Length: 414
Image (cartoon, rainbow, N blue to C red; front, side, top):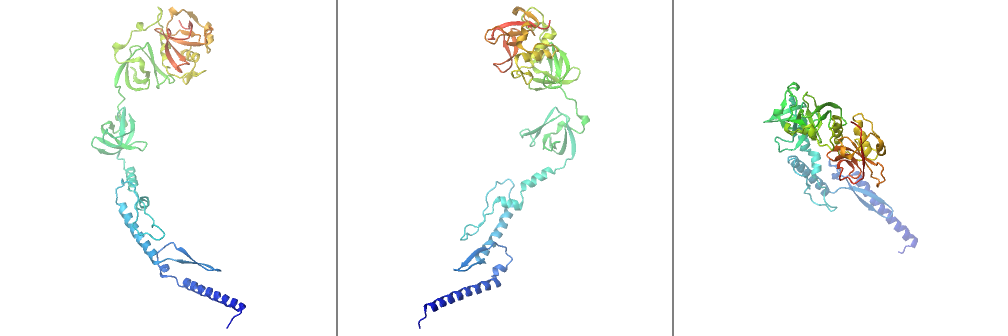
């Protein structure tokens, strides 16, 4: 029996229709009757399997038994590793802890790292820090020493964390032999020597000098802080005995004979009375005696050594030459010119042979045109102090060795 071409066409369409219908029945049956794995309490991420033909595209979720088994094994192993990690020392360095699971066809199973385990089990180091922070202060103490170090452990070989001052209040946590574990007002916890702590502020003894020194200048100011910008508290004379506490840069923290505490320039202090020079032995260039005011001007000018040179400057932030001279004299209430050139006719002319400390020296630094372009203050012994452009700061120089032509000198005070 032979079918026509038209019949052949209908027969092929019928077969395709029946094949598609059969597939649809199987799909519907699978959706109505899920696999046992789908009905378990195990939570998993389904992968996708795709079944397709020419006209249709169906997606069928599935999970085979071997995949479920691997997940169960992985979860059990994860719990074992977490329990193991939580018992390890908090100081053990981090390292990767890989779960010993079989590999699937798609690749390695997920890795359980130390950071994951730490997040689940908790970091024992954080717990210890919390415990330290909650240590209770049992009493309050006061520092009875000029300076008292706080260290990271019991002993002087431990790191220094801070330094406390006399009268500082600290919280006592506990005693450890001759040391005390304390907490400072800022919240820092550390150890300090217990014998320098007293029970009340009233028991704190006044600060005691560590040595007694002497003033080696005609007069020397006592200031409220370590610098000439601080208020003048008192003025002491040559040979006065002062109590010495500590050094702060070029300044000494001292106690005056009247009991006041302040700061003096360290270079004018000597350790013994025999080192104090007589006023008449101070070097001068001429026969004229050095007046107390002149000596004070010299001493004050030397307190500004090292201040940087700044063109147009007239403060401790920076000086030019005339600004420096004017600043020094203004400190004593004496008005002098601001411009170097104006010094040529100012004050009284003084010969080089009769120079004395505090005289103002004039120089021509502009190439020998005999105009005053630089000034400084004579300090005796053939030397002067000035704000130097070449050195970039206030320095002392030798008059005989200074390269610029010497123009002359003017005296402002008698």
